Length: 387
Image 1 (spheres, rainbow, N blue to C red):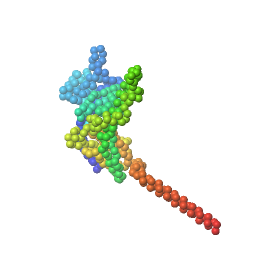
Image 2 (spheres, helix red, strand yellow):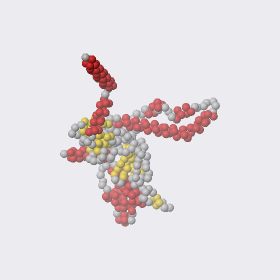
Image 3 (cartoon, rainbow, N blue to C red):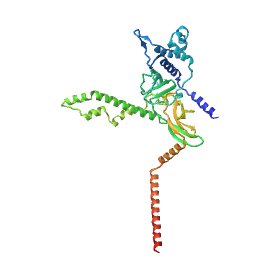
Image 4 (cartoon, rainbow, N blue to C red):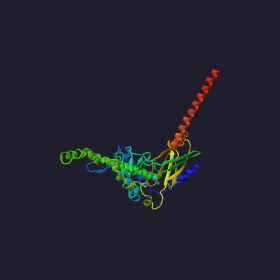
């Protein structure tokens, strides 16, 4: 009975609206095959020789996209003499004929990874950028050209054994409660996503401003100070100069608080009333054992959900979305020792200060009573000995 229920949840997950990553992933996988078969180190040069003729790798690279997006117009390269004497055609056509064409929603991706980006020499990275509230392909990169993970970017990597992706938005859901039973009932919420993303964007802006000020300080600082020192009428002190390049903490509040709405980096940064015109976004709560195994999914249109977990297992739980990379995972541990430890920790956190004072007072009173009782007992023993 559990297996049909799980399959039903997976089927429900595919019904959530979202854009299809299938063509993008297939093009990247095809180009990865081009690198493996037509390069030695993963470097795909576009031209070769004094006549600047296209290389086999570059031709294969272009055929992958043409065969995926314009099959009816370009299928002739997979037929006749052109196919027999064209290694680039053979590689791209073989992948086109043997690939599995299916819809690939963003919620089907594994949990995202953080920078720095790690690529094998034959991997192909797809840089996605948010443009007018829609994700667009900004470019495909070979393994020897590692792209930078910047704000408003999302990088999907096609590897030999699967797909991974990197997200700049580092937000996580929250475990509200974990109730024991035959199945553990975990309540997960993600009500503060906007606040997490806004904090990350503000910190990134501060780091960027500091880098710019540091650059100008190192390049022009000494020169500016020297010019001001040469002027007898008015001189600028080192303290004023540093304050000009490095503003104090409370000086930068106006810049950071001028617009409290996060920039359009993904669906979570956009205002709901503008982005969905009154409709709610659907999310997919995904969980799997930390050591691997059967995954579970639950579709919801709210910012919280309750999931059932097997006892004795450490799970990774994340929030997936078909509008972007989704959240990073959190750990939910249903092993007995871990649950007991969390219960004790939560109990200590829930104690009020007067509870602690009352406990200390009770302990002190108990010590005093025991001391008096011991003194009285000792006095009685002395009287008995004198008699």
